[in-house]
Length: 167
Ligand SMILES: [Fe+2]
Image 1 (cartoon, rainbow, N blue to C red):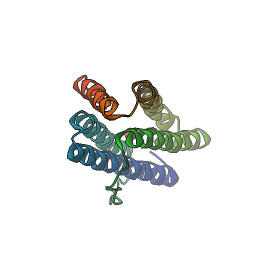
Image 2 (tube, helix red, strand yellow; image 1 turned 135 degrees about the vertical axis):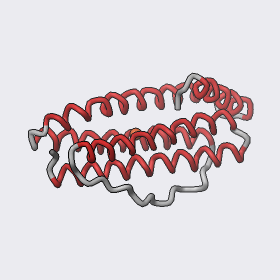
Image 3 (cartoon, rainbow, N blue to C red; image 1 turned 90 degrees about the vertical axis):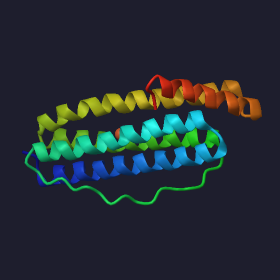
């Protein structure tokens, strides 16, 4: 069993994951339209992963005999400045998702809801890895540079990561 407050927080997190999924999908479509097919593939992977997270949160609520609420998804941005700017936004989005998960971890601790506290740990780890990956990509963009050749190389790098199942 989970508290009403915990149920609300987990449903809100499911909505945040759904929003992240649609932001990544929108970024992917923009990238594809600009000819960055590697980046598009990488971001489609990210989008699927976030959708999977949403499902996991909803499933957890139901498993605890709670009421899962499939969220209405707020419209994502459709226009982006550049591929490097998109990758900066990815890091910001991951950091904000991490912050909201940490808030729920703290709530679980305060409520002495150790089952939820424990269940959330894989998401804490997941976010840590997502942040590392986003930072690594930004570091490499810094090295590669953002002239036309650089952008091509960035796209290739993301394609390689996507083919390794990353994103
Ligand atoms: Fe997520």
